[in-house]
Length: 628
View 1 (tube, rainbow, N blue to C red):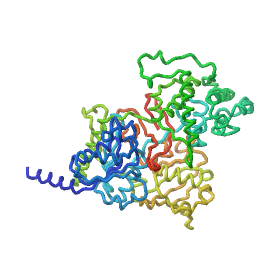
View 2: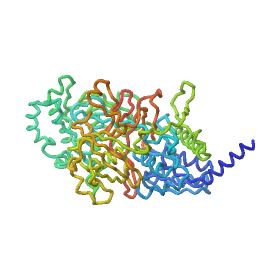
View 3: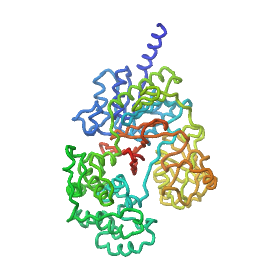
């Protein structure tokens, strides 16, 4: 008994003396702060860039209605102090990826606890903790599923040791020409929102794709292309310019996107030899359907008829156009938000009208919101269980009992041992991990004649590899600087393609990120074309690169996404939910649906930008679980 008391006293002393960093004050973060305060932790810093939304209030119990629009970190601190006003809690409304939160900053903490909302920020915190040699506890939830794992440099695998589920995208011709699933129409509708009101992206064009290889040689499409110029076809002017010329007249917008463009697609008759052809809609003769026949369903769960879609389209266009006209300054565009009524009505109406045209089942506003906003409903009790497990793992770390630390999985149903909570031993670090191995390196497949330096920095280094301030030097014996983190030093390089710097098949690049204290060697492999229209592909294990003949003889090989470094064969899945985007990484042998991760743009106050998210296209599986 004496030994137990001594151990308890030592743990209590360690708790009192420890300094904890909590990254994220959302669903898990709120529960975690409460647990830390009630467990005797006296020194806590919480950081979160996000602000409180109405949709947070049903589970993030530290927030009340009067807090909507305020900083999550600040309000979470104020509410948590109500449990114990003697605790020191510092709140920062900021991004943990900002340069002031460097390795020195991380070294002051005893343990770092992640309750984050996106892959980039998670990977960044992982690298900072490795560089600072500070223990990290990673966690996440998705519906009834949850996970907690402890990460220690040199002892266990890090966040990046295993490949994360890759981003699933659709070829542009599928979205623009031949949709076959509701999610295709929803993605198209979100692209249309951006083309009309948002930050227009050329890769998100919504007009018929005349370069579709399936339609090659269609004479009818060429003829109709000439006839369509008076109808506002985007080959004459951009979608937004044409809409502005028509003053966003709903009837003209409807006519273009659901009649004229559909007729143009019909002229590409090769597309419809094995598909059901689309049926153009008429503004004056909409199909006679009614959602009133759907009984006692609440409004958002009813599937709108085409006429009801048009009503919603007209009203939403008027509201959005008025907002758009009132915008001033550099960011003179709207940002689509699933919690904004007009934005949701627009996407619901447009996606269902397009679904009707292509004989695709329509979805209720509730379903469209879930699919467009990438939502898996959050469960407050799951967050509470996971937050409790985080603290249990922290106790083990503070006692120095790393051998007792576990991966802990919370399942939606009992496993073979009749357990809902399933612990497993921590795995050792992946020797080929591109982050925590002694000599990190990856191979990047791309077309050196097409990839610009700017795209390489934005999409490969910052996007796929989650660097913050990369410096890149070509290993050519001359010390050619390709990219510099010093502002303006390599600006003239940005528009040039990699081949302009004699980068070819087999060229090695030396990359450094001073902020993350991270070095990486990259081998460039030139490919004229990549599978699935990818612009690049990142591979952490060079053994995955086989000669084409060897690949064909050995059967299908694991594919590697442009956003997923494949560093081992261990199956890992990730999910983000609701506006918390709490993520779970679940072992592949779990008997659960195949679920993968998307992001949602976070809202910030004081004009601060969220640097943790990237736009993603979605895929819906047969069981209505969103995949990326």
